Amino acid sequence: MSEERPFGLDPGRITDVGRDGKPLPPEVPPPEWLSRRHRLILGLFALGGIVVGALAGATIAAFASGARGWAAVLALMTLAASPLLVLGPVQDWWRHRRKRG
Image (cartoon, rainbow, N blue to C red):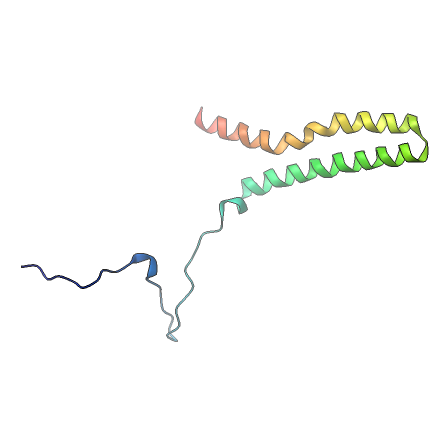
């Protein structure tokens, strides 16, 4: 006959204990969004947002001050810079695509 145990061990609840008898915190890997790749995506998106936002703000300031010619030039520069917002996600898509292909 086999010996029956009244309960089993839960591996999720087993913790290491230090020399002082206190349980040590479990070693948890950092979340995926903190990886180098995701920080690069977020950084590129933030950089694009800052550039586009600064140009849009300068466009509004120029228009409000009465410099309509400068406002038009800055508005075109804002439109030309707007693809910078997709630079991070496109770069991530390209790396993911290249890895499988």
